[in-house]
Length: 143
Image 1: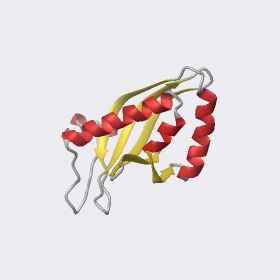
Image 2: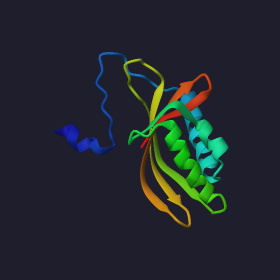
Image 3: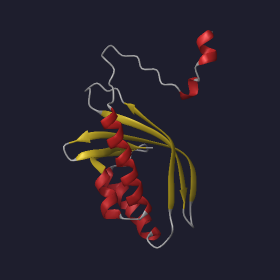
Image 4: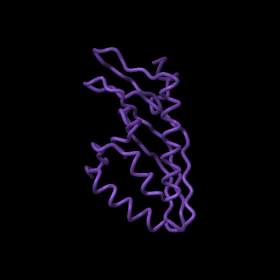
């Protein structure tokens, strides 16, 4: 009962595992932050050739869309935004090591996104899963 009053359960993660929980180093967090801001820049500038390099071949969108279909969709959108001013802001960024059976270095990134273009506006949560690969950090899932 005492903890209930001290912990905001809506903003707290509880991990229960029989194996040692994954942790993140300061260097990994710094690399992930740099990665998401480079990704945002390519997105904001409608630079599809750069944007697509941030995604892993195994990528799946929350609705089941695979990488090829997702990139075809994004290519159409970015092409239509090429000459428009697009603003994208991320706030309240949380980077959490994501427990998985393979003990891979996967991270869940939760953030609040503000997207503004002349034809579309969005304010809300964004959830991205990334992993460290030999080719750098890559997005493997997005919601």
